[in-house]
Image (cartoon, rainbow, N blue to C red; front, side, top):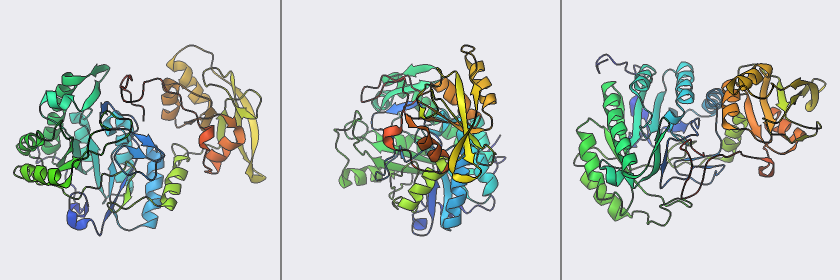
Length: 436
């Protein structure tokens, strides 16, 4: 498919993107939909942190939404505001480590809002030509690639690891892999007629003197704009003790890079759930709104009246998904919508059978919007989530979990539980599936 044949936005005003047009900053806003929790790389400056509404930086979000929840949230936002011109996906992981959710979200948004600008930000590792073609067909007009080096040794110092399919790369090998994938992604983005922005994180003593080389190379590939973003030293990362680049360093770098490609100078280092005009903080009412939307059914337009619970005695959520031999089904009391009633119990599928077991469980719970368990492994969670059943890991009173699901009441942090099977911290020992 040639550039001339690639689908182009028709009635979409691309000048209204505040990140690509500084003049639009005061009049138009954007919304990021946090549907991509997993990441396929670990950058030495990144610490993805959930439930941190007062912190504004990439990788931070107050919640994760399914594509259906994201559309419901967007529809509510558009009822409240008339300045949102852009819908973007920028994490908190990478959109193409969560490709299915990313593409489904874009499809839903484009159908509901045919004239809105769609954009995304990715590290480029998982971006295939087929995905780029689909993005073009959905009229996603702006794609950002975060590229921190064109020399494998320099780039290799940025990444703790990178995962391509099942193989983990580290050091120079990770740098070489990322450069190869990113340059190819830029070629495809331009081939299919989209606007390409390059983000480069300025890491003093690591890549600060090298960044003009990035600008030179991507300029020859048709990149439209570059954003040199100063490192924000973040706790519990390998680069937490480095110094944030000062204004003099930022100005000098942008001046050098500007010889090759236009420079963005008004970046707000947006959260993965950013909303409104650049640098506009998330208000309490918007925070409450996105939280309430995260408690909707995974597919909000489906009729799923029940919640399944892994419980021994019918009062507490106190069983791991894999150990439960039956699930208690609860619904709202038709005589008092504030109260809950027990509907029935259903047997769990027999142990064994691997994925077939979780498929059978999904079929058994197809009228349930969620399941409350002490903990669950990644395979059953993925199977249930794909079937539209939200998995809530918690410990405590069943009524607290039901209020969380049915009445959008916050679930106290003391009740939350999270099953983790990969390493965390500065020296990540994880397997590349992303900790979120």
